[in-house]
Image (cartoon, rainbow over all chains, first blue to last red; front, top):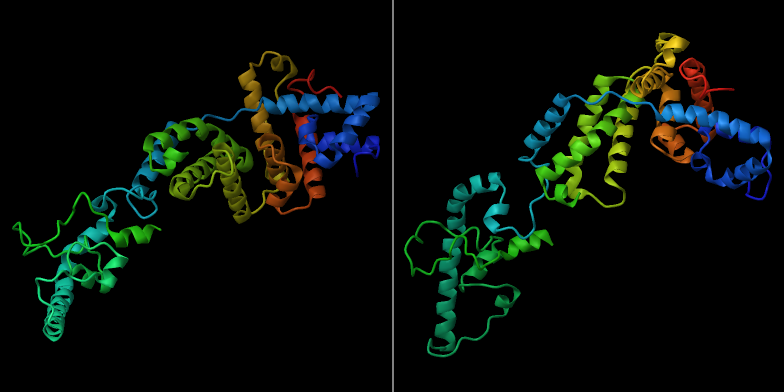
Length: 205
Length: 175
């Protein structure tokens, strides 16, 4: 039914019987025709007024207040969820050590031996290759080093960092713990304040 | 909501205090059972907390909460056999002389009881359209029925309520 068609009285009665007297609750497509009929038909107005009485009564309906125990139960349930995987995600730019899941931290120490088994041979191999190349080209250590192309894909603190990246390791997070206790050994700070892990940032993109 | 999204417990507690009553009321009208309504409310707020990180601001928080509660109620009702009309207890029928002395809260409580005593489908239809303010198309879709069937349920439900409540406030329900 379009807005220009007059609404039969029976249809208006059916409308108010179902939806009540408030035009906002009527189907949008029939609202204009119904209001037009109401302006001219005393009988239509009587149907509407009768429905308004029931509407007013329905609006008085109240439900019992929820128990205090329910509120406490909800808070307790959601608090227990705050520490598991369903908890809201941490902020993207939080300090690196803070965003590591607890389970990952537990595995950190155990992973160091595996890392060392991967890194040490790689470092030795790289050193050997560098020595051979240096001998072959005759490039002396006094000359300025050429820029290394692979270094441009990330930010590295030490030349061997690129080997860690190649193995899929996080430069800042997976640095070996022992052998770095003393200063001046060329080891990375395990949690440097002014560094960000490139791998971690990629994971969030 | 943004604070809840970031895991702010105080913001969640504030939302709980503000909306818990209306969510429980909505669920109770749908289910006609206080204990089941509280279960639904608990699940609704648990979903708010666990889904907050994925929240998209497409609706007001109150609207979202009520939609979740309504859906949980419908799921629950679908899993339980439909109550026979004969099994539904009649609401208390106050004496006309006592009705005039009822306070507003008592009237509201009795109206709530009358709504809760409606047959399930009529109760859901009236809850969705009258109390939750859904349009007829949306309400019919949620109930998986036609708009015509929804109108029929609404009309029958209102007719039943009118008959049951006529003694309560005759001046409001004059023919």
